[in-house]
Length: 320
Ligand code: 13P
Image 1: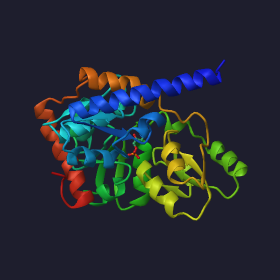
Image 2: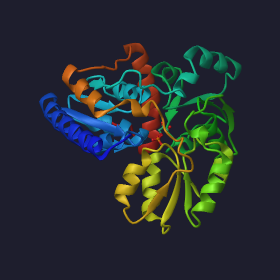
Image 3: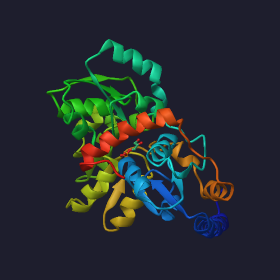
Image 4: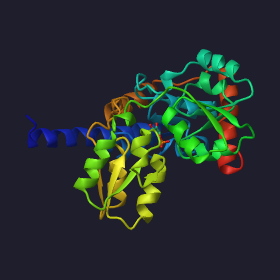
C-alpha cells in the first residue's frame, strides 16, 4: 500500500539527490541534457530539454566539459559523434532503443545492393554504424524537409516504417522504400483508443507523433515531433488535447500550459528504456563518471557526415 508517509519520504530523498547532483555538476563542469520522455523529476533538473533534433544541436553548442545525456543510447551516441572532444555520459548503459536495434549495418548494406541508385535516409533512432552507412540522417521534426532536399527519387528510409509512410504521404513525388522497423511504445496506440478518447473529451484536439500507426495518424489533427507539440499547443485555441506519444511529454506540456488539459489515449504509452534513468543513477554517473559513450573514430567520422548533412538542410550549415 502506498502511504502519505512514503510519498513524503520519496520527496525528501529526491530533494537530497537533486542537491547532490547540483554539487557534482558544478565540480565536473557538466551539463544535464534531457529528452522530453524522461521522468518528471529528471525534467525538473534539466539544463536543456527537448526533442532529438534540439538535443543534438544543444550538445554541439555547450561549453561544458561533460554532457550527462538523459535519454537512450542513440541520443547519447549522436552527442558523442558531434562532440568528440567532450565526455558524454549515459547514466544507465542498458537504456537502449528497440527501434534502433531493428536494423544492422550488414542488413542495410544488403538493401543498398538491391537499390543501387537510391539515397539512404536514416532516422536518428539508429546506431552510429547504421548512420555511417547512410547518406543523411533525419529526425521526426525534419524528415519531410530532409527527403525533399534529395535529388534522388528512390529513397531507402530506415528504420521506422510509420515515419517512412508519413513522409511518403507528404511527398508523393518520391518513391520511399520502407524498412520493417517500429517503435514498440508508439504502436501500442490503436485506432479505437483515439476514437474512445475523442468521445470522452469532446472538442479535444489529437496530436500524434509520426511513429504512431497510420490509422492513428489519420484521426489526428496535428502530427509532429515532441518539440513540435509544445509549439502547436501554445498557439492552438483548443483547451484540451489528446497526446499520442510517450507519457513523459505531459510533464512540460502541463507545466507550460496550466490552463489547458492533456490526456493520453492509452495508459500504455510508457517507454521502459527512457524510464530506466533515475535521479540516483544521474548522481552515480557524475560521481563515478560513467558510462562514457564513445564511438570508434572511423565510424564516428562517417556518421558525423550523415548528421552534419541533416543539420545543413535544417539550418543551412552544420553546427560548429
Ligand atoms: P522526437 O525527436 O520527436 O523527440 O522523438 C524521439 C523519439 O525517440 C520518439 O520515439
